[in-house]
Amino acid sequence: GSSGCGSRIKDDTQPRTFRFPFVWMASSFLLGLLVGSSGCGAGLLAGYWSRKRADEEDHRTPATIDSEGSIGPEGPTPRRKHQDALKFRRSGSAAFARNEMTLVDEKLVIAMVGLPARGKSYISRAVIRYLNFLGCQVRLFNAGNLRRASGQAGVSSDFFNPHNAEAKQQRERMAMQCLDDTIEFLNSVKGCVSVGILDATNTTIERRSHVFDRVAQEPGISLLFLESICEDDAMLQENYRLKLKNADYDGADACQAQADFMKRVKQYEQAYQPVEDVEDGVARNYIKMVDAGRKLIKCRGSDQRSKSDVVPKLVFDLLGSLHLGTRTIFLMVVAPSENDVKGVLGGDTGLAPLGKERARALRSFLCAREAEEKENAQVICGTHQRHLETVSLLKKVGCGGNRTRRVLKMQRMNEMCVGTFDNMSVAEIEQLYPEEAESRRKDKLNYRYPGEGGESYQDLVSRMHEHILRLEQYQGSTVVICDKRVCRVLLAYFRDTPLKDMPYLKVPTELVELERSHSGFHEKLHSMPWRGRVSGLYEPGSPHLSVGHEDSFDRFLRTQVSMD
Image 1 (cartoon, rainbow, N blue to C red):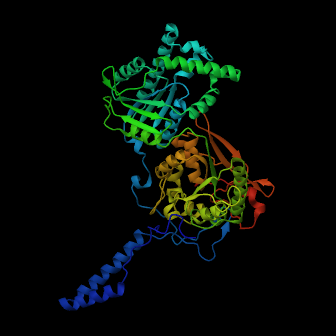
Image 2 (image 1 turned 180 degrees about the horizontal axis):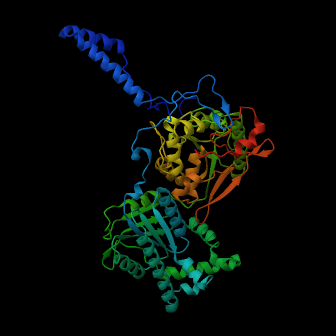
Image 3 (image 1 turned 120 degrees about the vertical axis):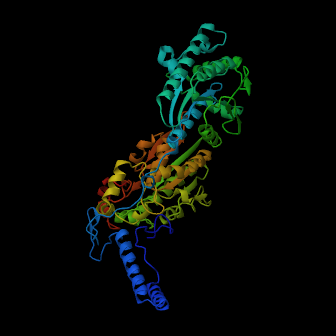
């Protein structure tokens, strides 16, 4: 097939030669005659042939598979033109990506503000998930968890009465201890962007002033208040329902738990003071979020001692995409393609019979789910042939059988580009470019494939982060059709997996369902039937499996390769 990275990809190891050697030689001869020196033309000709030989020596072409090349248990066996391994001459910055979050030394405390059941915990975890995905060092410090750990789990609503002086003192002490832990974490992180989130109510000016004064004692640490306000009654009722799953109400009667929680909310409302532009004579630095993103207000106050404003801008962009409505995201790996079956990387081939069977199984699953929900799912995919063949089986069948699904085809959803290694097998890469293979094994996150368009996982994160915001915006059900490495990046985001562990995530063999929960997304797996067995997921570079040899399916799935 054509290059999986797009038609613009070319082999940058090809020798550079002159396009018109005959015209060049004729011009050299005539020039020699004009100047009356027979040695001039000869010298120019000699220069041409010496430069041509030098170019061939410096830019060796990759080995090719001759007509007798065979497909073995480890993929195609190459016949090389050169006995020594080939090398790419490129700098370290070209061979390895660098996360921009490691180039900025910014420390920030994000102090949550808001009444109970306003989505503070959900928003906190969403911010952590997003910043972690982008490479920041982030940690959550929850005052409620600290209270429960101190033996006060399940306390009654009287504990939150603003007129209960003893309880108020305990709450203040635990909140400040939580803040001290946050600052200790930030001071322990060096040389990169670090964020500590103080997840507490912080509903009074007095509390926020204490938080501000404590952070002001730490040089190089900034403070941002993030307030969540909810005015939508339907949204509030849903938040109240989810809040009953809180650890404070484990094993409690549902009706009694709801009554106690509503009383707790009333206790907080008595003392609640929304964040203002100026409090106690100090301009506040804050973001105010109303109804989970319906309205956003940003005020840049006086506590801006850092030279950059990286994190607040990122957080503001994320909050503009969040909502607290129910939604489901399905992740489906398109597999296998014809190149997967051959055991070569990249390419833009169509689906193998196994891949078409998986696509039909997905169609059956969606039809059943949409019949229950009375609403069609929207589909997002890349632009390769395997993606288009998959969605062609999906878009014409929707809820009721007579409505089409909305399909969004996005180039940024295409698989990671392997550059010059496109349409090569793992065995070829290991044999012809052992130094490249070893470099990738040492740093799979930052290693960038050589050649035009070659990418790393770090590059893939940069390419995907805008799509992540788009996924956060969608309501209802969304089906993402993607390749394995793109699926791995998406899973790392929703699972809040550290970047360093991303390249090693095992991609589930099943259809992944991600449903919004109180703290983030709950993951569920759906088996995809395959002729009486559970279908799995291919691994690039697996033992050769000819199209139609389904008896080798289990062995095909179990194969693992280092270049994945």
